[in-house]
Length: 97
Image 1: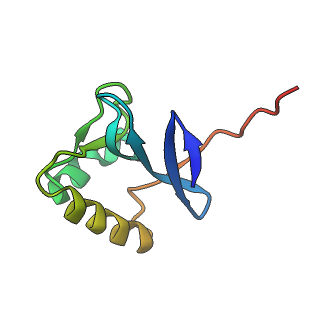
Image 2 (image 1 turned 180 degrees about the vertical axis):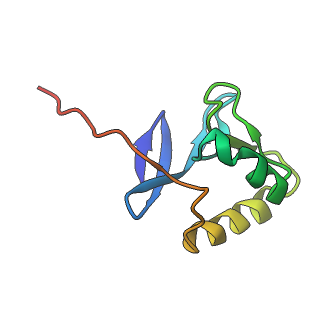
């Protein structure tokens, strides 16, 4: 896990897959790192997901959702099966001078 946006980012195969956020709304839940082209298919499979209000390119699952744990578990299983719809390449970190 690495820090990103004040959250903890989960990586697999060099791609950022999920961001776990514990801040104030709208940063209280899990961000699914994806692109807008994959939103319809992922929302079909996980109807509880919605586009994030700030990072609209990613999908969001609020921690108070009824099926939060079950949905996150299903997402992790998809990620471990290398679902090509989930995961984005992160930008290289800049070195501090």
